[in-house]
Structures are given as C-alpha cells and as structure tokens.
Amino acid sequence: MLPSQDREPTYQEIRGVFVAVIDGVLSREEAADWSSYWIINDRYKRVENKLVWEVIKYLTGVDLETEPGEYLHDEDDFREMLASFDVESKLKS
Image 1 (cartoon, helix red, strand yellow):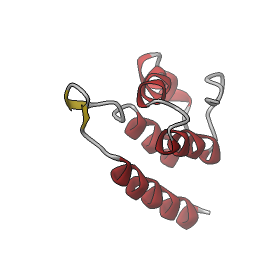
Image 2 (tube, rainbow, N blue to C red):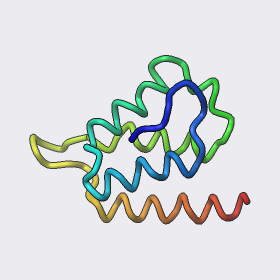
Image 3 (cartoon, rainbow, N blue to C red):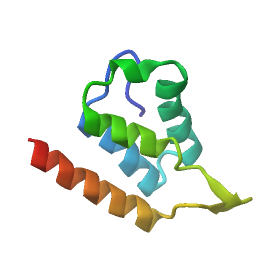
Image 4 (cartoon, helix red, strand yellow):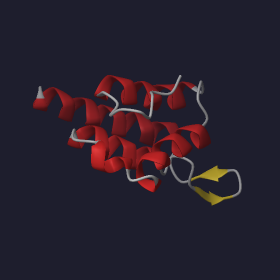
C-alpha cells in the first residue's frame, strides 16, 4: 500500500515503499509514479523532512532502464541505498 499523497509521508512509510519494491510487492513503475507525483505536482514544497525528500527523489528513478528489460539499479543497489538512508535516519533521531 502506498502512503497517502495528501500529506508528507513519514520516513517509516516511505521506507515501506522501498521495501515493497525490494520484496516485489510493489512494481518499480508504481513506486516511481507515486514518488514522481510529489515532484510533478509541486508537492515537494510540502516535504519538510530532508531525508524523506531524498528517498522520494531516489524512488523516482527506480524504474530507469538501460535497455528494455534491463534496469539501471538492481536489488543490491536498493538494499545499499536503504541501509544508507536507515543510518542517516538514526543519526538524525
């Protein structure tokens, strides 16, 4: 389930989107479409948490392909980025 777009998502909610992509519960395209909404519709102006904003920006590119069916980023890249975001989250707590 994707977080509401009516308010700024929490870090845990957006982390859940990331995990859902890694686990195959959510497609890359669904996650990219959801996160792109925040940029295209100027929702970024409502995102005060800088870490949440960084994750949203990263998620906009999870569906980028180098050629048809070949993605720029693989699951290992996603896990590495998620670990990095988790560390940053703990540092800011």
